[in-house]
Image (tube, rainbow, N blue to C red):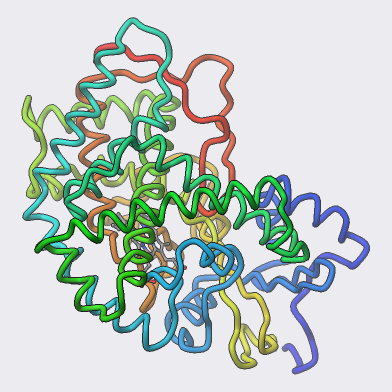
Length: 436
Ligand code: HEM
């Protein structure tokens, strides 16, 4: 039994320099090691900051679902707000409720299914671009899949030409680098200092605002125009909403796709099963909405990739009022995190957690698993609003790429996850392309 005064266990004060170093260089190891050493509730004291890591499905349910009113968005996202403004991802309270109500219908399954052809066409384009490189030098597949996910957002949601995806991705990189820098330096460095990262951030934010402003001005009718109008608010608010949808909607899906192609290269037996399923379900054609339920194994592969490499690896929150979780007191103002990356490797719920095994998601094996042991899309009221679109993009693209091509990571390129706002592959994903 834990008494009121007992705090969750955690690394001793003298570990602070080491923790700080890990916060900069290896955030995933920081989370994994503390969770495996100290258990399901950990208090990580780093200088003046206290981080409460809760690594159990019941605790995740408490923070994200049952007591969600008591938790607002925290570390990293709080910093990203300087670029995203009060868009749907970062807003709170009444404003968030209004935005969610206005935007959710535009992304619901029925609406997305009706436009599945756009996703399929972008997946087909991606395969064609890569096929053009057969026999040539390596291609950065991370960049190519980003082109696809930006293309989908532009054509399906925003009805706008977003310009070259690489330019957009570059601006978002500058924004994220700075948000992460501010988060890991615990906001100790004032944002008005003219440091290079800060200058890059300002320039990128200005460019994103210009682009998003043009998108807003181009909206005639259409799904997003309705949503933006429904959310109330002025042009600046609509612009923030567009920047938010662009960030939340392209990088997560691109991360899933990049990791999936890398894992299929590492696991040729799995790739072979995906290829066979795609050939059987699709033949030579592009996927349609109804195929999503037929590409069962491909779906399981995508789920297993998001288990090991959840694009949103951390769900950061701040406790508004004092709370109790797992019997431990959580003070008002505490930074509380649920970490899908560690939760998805919790040995109690995921036997042999490091093993890549898509069959874990077969219905019979998934049946007894607690619902909140798997959170690639978050949970509770702030659950991902773009889940159906993200899954459709991932499953369609994986099926088409696998059916048509063989992609291999260039020898010597290590697959090291890099925990930014989303989980990237450090140094991109150079792959060579051969016919299937
Ligand atoms: C595989 C792809 C995706 C993954 C893994 C993913 C993951 C997530 C997660 C974990 C959250 C919750 C964050 C939190 O609670 O702090 C979230 C929220 C959100 N996602 Fe996604 N997402 C994906 C695709 C998309 C797409 C395609 C869009 C839009 C077109 C999108 C838009 C959003 C927005 C706007 C939110 C904030 C929702 C709110 O707070 O009400 N996501 N996403």
